[in-house]
Image (cartoon, rainbow, N blue to C red):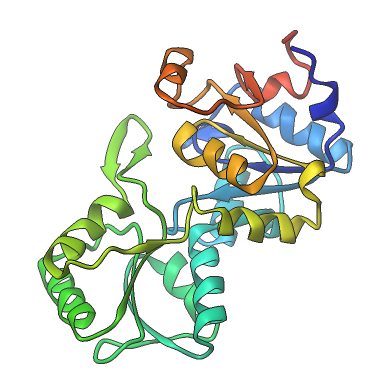
Length: 263
């Protein structure tokens, strides 16, 4: 497959896990790919459905992997959620089940935390999940708070292990209230539009690189930008027959884009 058209793009939106790294392990070709982006003066953004960490924390994680990029190159589902909620209800309040990356994004967007009568109940990935928090969320949603999820993922890869993600954590609240959550992360095209706006690139100039058909690739298709599936993560070539849509490019990994291999 010829990659000339892809390499001429000026903007790249990249998923992280399964594309650049897997847990705390950098994937082959990732460092060379980031160096290629920098050398070509490309505009790039690492987009993650995880709401757990802030861009600064993600920058530090990449630094430990040997990849030096600024925090401005990261965009999380927490930031997308905060941006959307601020556009809907400026100066609103939320009851949050999530980690610091989510609460900090909401604070920065002008939101306050509220356990009594919030405008929203917002759920993201967390390790401090409890019956008491679920119970409080159910009461608040029944009293009129809108239910928001940072992303619809059911599971999250934690190195060699699989952990429950936001879609699984929010399910008991949906079931107990009969209310369906609105999710801001991929495949919601709003997150892609926010990312592309941050890059300042048009649709024709931008490509999304991801390892998941049901989030990265479909989000790119819905957003009208070229899609690149890398087989370094969860999706295999055999999995493609399950889907009624197809990526523009299929590569073994991001090193192919940097010219490390013949594609």
